[in-house]
Image (tube, rainbow, N blue to C red):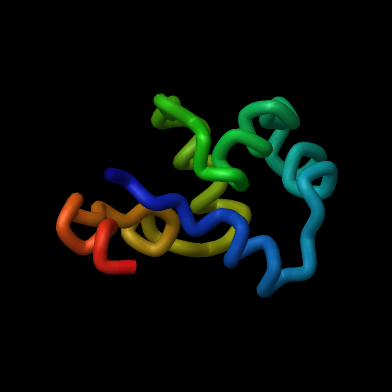
Length: 73
């Protein structure tokens, strides 16, 4: 499973979904799906825009979590 840390990054900068949409040009629905960790796919350009906005690496935005670790939490 891939865990998305968009909600944490947005919280640290006190940003709303509408703020991220305005700053990146991404569709609100795309941001909402990532924020709620319900997205089933993500475009590379989306990752790039988010990393640029939050000045982070892909590894800080997305994290691979094994199924075993997922059931322990």
